[in-house]
Image (cartoon, rainbow, N blue to C red; front, side, top):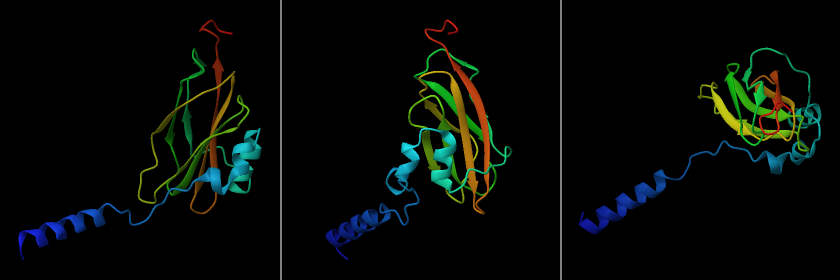
Length: 152
């Protein structure tokens, strides 16, 4: 084998290794547009999961009690049931209730997801996890948004 054949084979293997074997992410904005049009969390949850019957256990949502800046509110979901396949965040302070939907890889450890969200005013934030068997678990937290940090 000469050098050109070797380099060509090496580049071919490199290119093939960069092609993902299977894409797991789903674009929920395209597959379930009604989720993003829902004005209330229970409507968005029903549009995404087909039901809004949930168990208030198994999920631990952390958010600040008071957010001085509604544009960058840190949200962390620490405890998620084993076998979770979808994790979603909703809120009731903005016109669009859905915040984010994550597809969880079956081999991942679903713990410690963090995101920063925006809230126009004081409202509730919800974390909902759907397990492989279709059960829904949730937690909620009220976040008070102050105006200019003055406790408004």
